[in-house]
Image 1 (cartoon, rainbow, N blue to C red):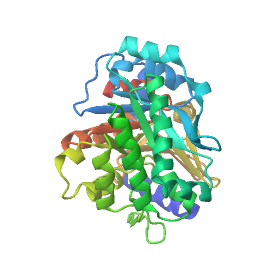
Image 2: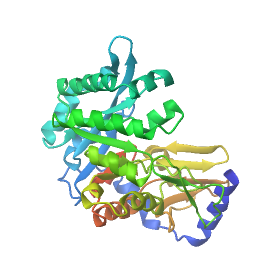
Image 3: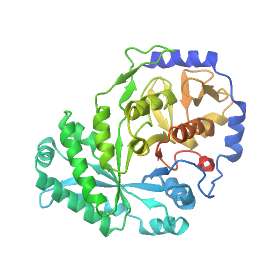
Image 4: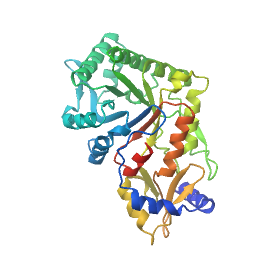
Length: 368
């Protein structure tokens, strides 16, 4: 794996021109935050925030007008011996922060993420096989959302269900999503479902300069359509290629979107949110390590040990390489974000889902 990474480093180093202006732009303007009105043409700009990243909370609050949806990563749906299921994570609720967002941007919706957690295989099978248990758990979820005056949910259950069962119980999982989504939407609550990309990096058959993708079988286009028809939006999580020497290449995003949108009605295309990463990665002999803006700053300004920022014409991403060791660092920039936003607009997709606010540079808000 690591050897393949550095074959790619050499390949890209030879063909990609240096982008001299990006370094100066980030140094001079990277910390500037725009709180102007939203300028993106597509319907949805969603930003995830996590309890462990206070900067994300600040951006969501101060630049609230840039976002149609803010998703705090707060809650878990866990089993309960007394009530089928229960909601954990309530200690993370920050009511004053929500109020500040609403004061700054009354139309911005708050849809917390609910993650399926702590279920063993037997308990989860029992729930999937019993409509009454599913309905009871759905009521607990719905009542919790209504009681806390949220605008809806981001329901992260699809991949988790398959992982719990260690089996592709796709039909049963989709039926659960349909039931819970119907129960929530009948109360005018929005439902967003995150799904993994259908295609992933094919390490076995890829070569430097000839990247191959493999189909995951985690859902087919008809199953995707079934899910999309029952929810408001589907967040395809194109955040991390998990491949060699690239972060989230645009050709990979396009492959996954084309797979689920071929021959689909336009109203389903308008439900798709592509995942946009605000974090980067370091590839070196120790493996792959995620990084934030403050980490990238250190490498970017170290002109003695690191080369200037370059552009990867294959993935449409920026990166830098070390001068004296085998290391490549990818991080999003305005130049890499812009073609992805343009792609969403030109293909009439629903919008973008950013993971996560506070991990990237403040001035990314100027694009939103």
